[in-house]
Length: 67
Image 1 (cartoon, one colour):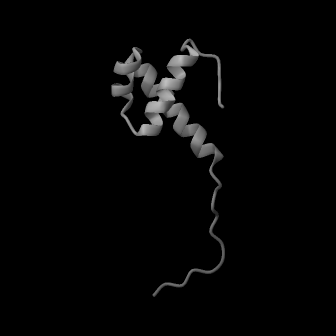
Image 2 (cartoon, one colour; image 1 turned 60 degrees about the horizontal axis):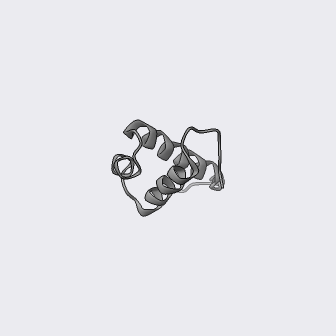
Image 3 (cartoon, one colour; image 1 turned 45 degrees about the vertical axis):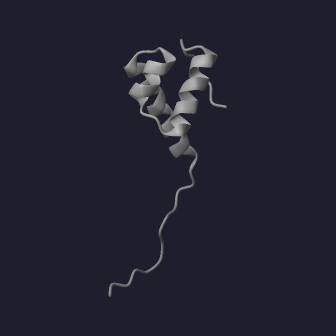
């Protein structure tokens, strides 16, 4: 699991990840977990960046034919 130095407790981080997976908004997750909305928004953004950095990149090559 991705961990970096944070003032959030492990329980808060786990709950935020759980809400991220469920598709809840960051503001709603912040209310339930008990953190500031900007903290949850930043946490969700870092999760999205982590996911995007681990996805394979697809490069297109070859000829393109227009119809």
